Image 1 (tube, rainbow, N blue to C red):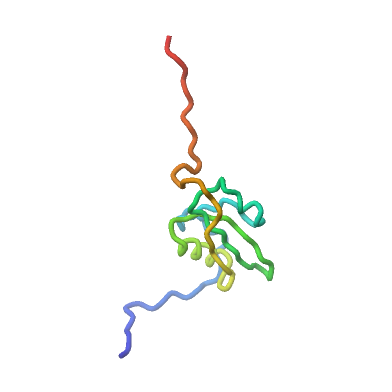
Image 2 (tube, rainbow, N blue to C red; image 1 turned 135 degrees about the vertical axis):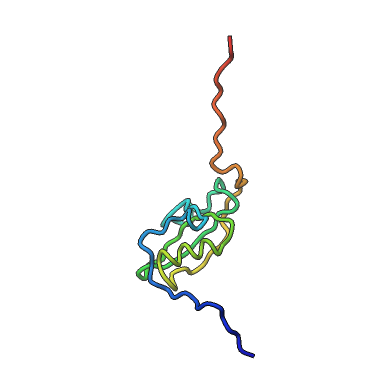
Length: 111
């Protein structure tokens, strides 16, 4: 049994110059950081630890997104194939809805 594709698969054109994380549904919280900084529990629960290689040097980022595939697509387009080594859950404990929340400022009492 042979499978016929309706349209040909896209070919990789090389890394993009500066892909924007928000176009991929991602938010990079820490870039090229250490494991000690990533283990901070004040980050949201949906943050992922991304380990990748660029020019034979290993790096680690903390990135959040609803889906791991969005994170993979962002790093694949940014650094090229074979760059992403692993995507793991982070150590964050904060509810993602409360990440970045700022309480409204009180205007004071009316006289």
